[in-house]
Length: 208
Length: 208
Length: 208
Image 1: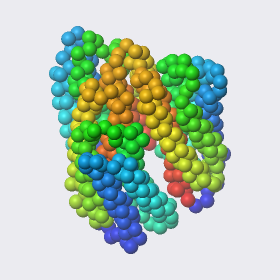
Image 2 (image 1 turned 180 degrees about the vertical axis):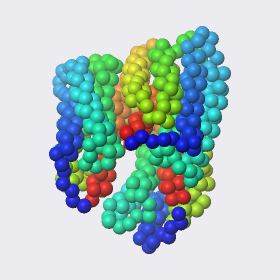
Image 3 (image 1 turned 60 degrees about the vertical axis):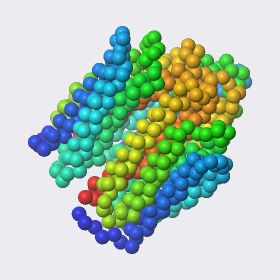
Image 4 (image 1 turned 120 degrees about the vertical axis):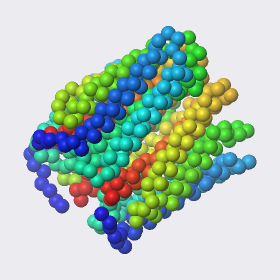
């Protein structure tokens, strides 16, 4: 089935594109953690702002879904895609907040596996942001979800090696517990990107 | 679309109302933890009884959904709402059981953030119990899910501050680990209430 | 509604049967952990192979679902069932990998509750593998999901007692953290089997 997007439909694609572009802002902020003299408090505060922007986008999307207007694909799928994009941001924001709240910024350096996972997240954000506008024509989406899932595997391996390091005896028990919380949020963000990809796949399969 | 509930439909609304009222019994029991000389063993045992009641209600609902009778909204949504209400109770029961099993009752006091989350849960239970009978007429449900989600945010902030306290060095590592398990169940209960609210929102949007 | 499976449909039932039979291979490998002088590295490596086989089966199923052919039940349910069977294997594989990566094999023995949960998983795998071929005729599925859920409860109780032991002071904090990761994967595998059972129940209810 081929289909012609209407002007009304365009609004939906814009929401998803804006939401995903906002995730790139989030992962760019986390990337700053790898800089020498990274200012974790400032990173955390800017992440909170970016998260508020995500909330506003999601809220606007929900209002539009709940309106009587026609939707370009199932209301439930639009809802899910919007809320899953928002979930990613919640985890990105949590990474910044926990690093700051737990005072992990006083460590000389964060384990390098943390930066590895952040780089994976940044790539996931970029492929997601590039894919969202293609929902309109349903073209070249397969390569996106395959790549997003491949990145999730890569993030998963980095996460496992991070835990091996944390449990190696290099850090005291409380520091391990704090870092573990941060690691779990990073891994949840990788997973959350995969959930987005999964929903895009479901939508694409229904439309094909 | 306006719709007229039938006598058969009424049975479904009663199930949801009973299930949610049972959650209030659960959160009231957790509230007792804040009392001086709280008897954690007794609280835990009574929570197990309340959980058995929830199981019985859910089981009866499933039987009714699986029967050939007409349902007031999608079978899948009824199933989901029933199982999500049951999930909340599982987490409430787990809080009591873990506090008791881990012997955390020998601590002079629990961190106050635990009581804060319990108060949030109690409010979530109350707004949920008040909303369930309104499923019948689909009126004033929006304020419920907005409030339930707002409470979840509040619980989330209290959970974060609880972890900051647990990781502060005030407790030894094993006590931290035990409390962390309890904290995670409390937070999962807050989330589980939000999932209920989300399903109610989905049902209401479909009916509107 | 009675229905007649077509030759095309048969292919779907074969996928589910193969995927579930593969899970039995996975739990049998975990059972070897209880043997004296268990070779954890070898168990872990063989689990990775079995997991790759699961991935291949799932991938083939997805291709078939995405093709234009008719499906014996909702595409979304086939998708979900396939991905949930695959999820179980991911957790089984993780158990082996973490035991090996964390060097837990140098402990004289693993806590017996770990073997208890493995036995529960093995039984869940067997009842699942026996049930999958019955999807074709939709007969005697109820006893499967009831038993699978009962086993999940049993696994849950063993998991709780495992945590009580881990937090008892018998192990140092880092060993507790490592074992906790393994325990969480075991419990996630029990849950993942329950999710499979839940989807089978949903499918059966729709068909009835």
